[in-house]
Amino acid sequence: MKLATSFTGARGVRYPAPDVARGFMLLLIALANVPTWVYLSRSSTPSADIVDTVWLWARTLLVDRRAYPLFALLFGFGLATMVKRRIASGTQGYLQSLPGVEAGCEPTPQQEAWAREQATVDARRLMRRRGLWMILFGAAHAMLFSADIIGTYGLAAVFFGGWVARKHWRRAAILSVIITAVSVVMMYNLNSFLASQGLNAVEVVRRGADSSTVTPVSYVFNGVTSWSGTTLMTVLASLVVPAMFLGARLADTDLIAHPERHRRLLAVVGVGGLGLGALGGIAIAVRATGGPLIIWAISFDRVAGLLSACGWLALLALYAGGPREGGGLTGLRRLASAVGRRSMTAYLSQSLLFAAVFLALPALTGIELHLGEARTALIALGVWLVTVVLCVVLERSGHAGPFETLLRTAVARSERKRRLPAPPVASAVVDSDAYGLIR
Image (cartoon, rainbow, N blue to C red; front, side):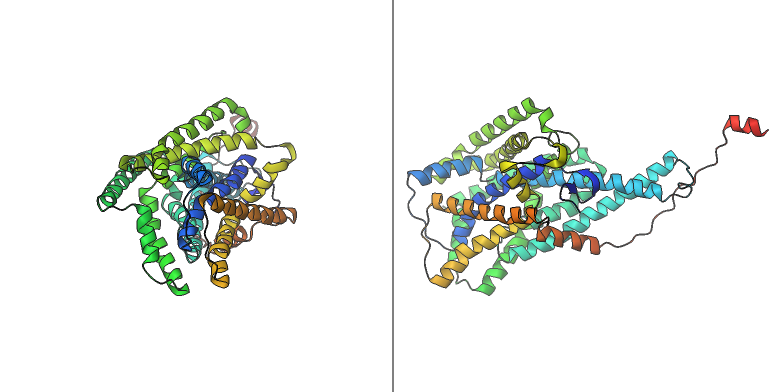
């Protein structure tokens, strides 16, 4: 299988923009996740200096609660693209299996509708099967990192893969509005309650981490139980699903596939989305740097995060450009694309590297980490660069990411045959001119 094509077949040209965006997105993911590793390792944090303060502002306005909505947008786009190509190839396969095709008989409209319906069912089954395996991958990852997101997206694919396959966009829009409203209200009520107790969500996490002695067994157990308890809630009461649907809807346009055709629009969305998202995060940045807590701002920041994610996607698509003749990319685009094509491998590798730095290294050496915000950001950058090197090596040797290969193999081997309904029988039609000659 050539890396320049999608797994759905040689005809599916792989667009560079989603891959390049995923590659840079994983840098944002690393920057957003590293504070969690600091908490898990119980590392001490020195008082923030001017560099730490500047970085806290930048991270709050541009990264925190912005990276994962971008992940969800790209996941939805990839899901819809996969479904579209699988339905197209499956429809052709079913049409070729009809009796009389080898003799040159053209399929009837009823037979074409039958073939497309069977291909759609197959695509829906594929999405659900893939989602179930992603949940399993996420559970395994949660043993190391309880904030895993793979299982969340897998659960979303299981629940709503059929909607994407059948393009139930009206249902998706209604559900997205409901989920957004529920998320805003729940976040407001939760933080109002915590504020009445003199706490905030970060302090609750810290107190939970500091309240007991951590052993390898308890670490794994607590990670999996925490993950299992939050995964369903994240799907039903966060902006993951609305962002996923929005990304899937973009697959019906050429905004991401051919960004070179929409430069002005994408520039406006990019600058406007990041700008509005940053405005929505100002109150949170003030709180992060020692200012007062504004309860309603926490809920508003969630919506602002989705706006920022749209801005990031627009600008990264502009930077990546459209398909090139021969599929070749150069420079930083090529590096980011290599990572983006192996996003699961890069994401899981980040956790392994972070665990080595924040868990294994202190345990083996007895050295207590004492890191400021800016230094932890440099560690995140270093971790991302290591994954870049890993993915580039795999790219040059012509290999896909090992975890992508494992997922595809598991999905393919777990497929079960289903009983197909009989195709419509083509009725015999006699051409009137031919009938006249016979007569």
